[in-house]
Length: 321
Image 1 (cartoon, rainbow, N blue to C red):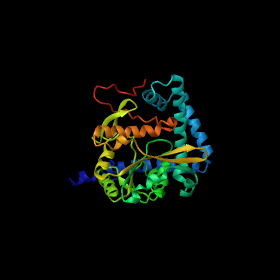
Image 2 (image 1 turned 90 degrees about the vertical axis):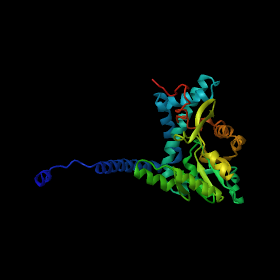
Image 3 (image 1 turned 180 degrees about the vertical axis):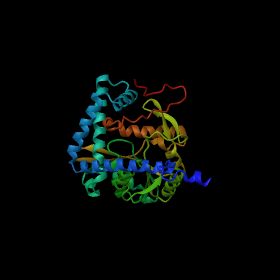
Image 4 (image 1 turned 120 degrees about the vertical axis):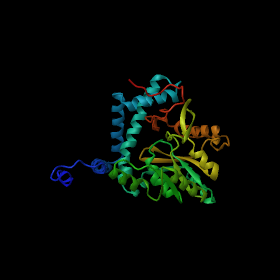
C-alpha cells in the first residue's frame, strides 16, 4: 500500500476542484485588472469625447443589426405600436446611441473622484422629495434605467441623510472593487438576498431611505405579472411588500443626460402604486416607470430583455434568427 501511495511522487498530480477554482478566480481577476486599466485610461477623456464615442458605438450596433438593436426594436414595437415604422427605427438608433454614451460615461463616473461627479450634476428637479424622511418617515427611492443610473449612487449618497441600497457584486474582482468604491460612497450596502430585505425593512422603519431598481426582471418567486406598455412583464413584489409594512413614501429618481452633464429628476410615482389591492399596486409600479420613460424614451435602456419571462401560453419573445 505504501509503495502504491508513493508511486505518484514526482508526477504532476491532478489538480483539485479548489485549485481549479483558484486558477479561474485568478484568471478572472486578470481580466478585471485589464478592464479596470482600460476604464481608468478612458476616464481622463472629456465628457464630450466619451459621449461621442458612445454615439459611434450605438450607430455601429444599429448599422450591423446587433442583438442589442434587435431587442430594442422588439421592445419598442410593444411600447409604441402606433408609432410609424420610420420613427420607431429612428428611436431604435437614438436609444442605442444613448446607451452607448451611458457605457462610456461609466468610465468617468467610476474612476474619477466624487468632485468630478458633483461638478457634472448641472440641474436638479424636485430634490425636496428626497427629504420627506426628515419627518421620520422612510423613503423608497426607485431608479429605473433612464439616463445614466450610475450617476445616482454618488448623488444619493450626498442628498439623503442615510440610504441603503441592494448590491450584487460584479463577477470580476478588480472591477467589483472599482464599482464598489465609486457606487457606494456614503451609502450602506445590503446583500441581494433575504437578509438584505430585512436590512431595507429596518432602514425604512428607522425613517431612512432605501434604493431599488424597479424595472428589473425579479428572481423566481419574487415577482408577479403586470402590464408594462401593453404586455405582461414579470414585476417585483418587494416594493409593495416594503410599503405595506412601513408606509414609506416612494420617489422616482433618474439622471437624465443633458449638455455639460446630468440633470437629476425626482418625481412622485403614479398614485396606483399605493393601492391596497396587490394587482393595482403592481400595475401602478409599472405605470410609474413609464412616466419616467415617456418624456425621453431615447434615454431608456430598451436593450434589456424585460419580457423574457412570460405567462404560460404567451408567445416567447426575442426569438431572433
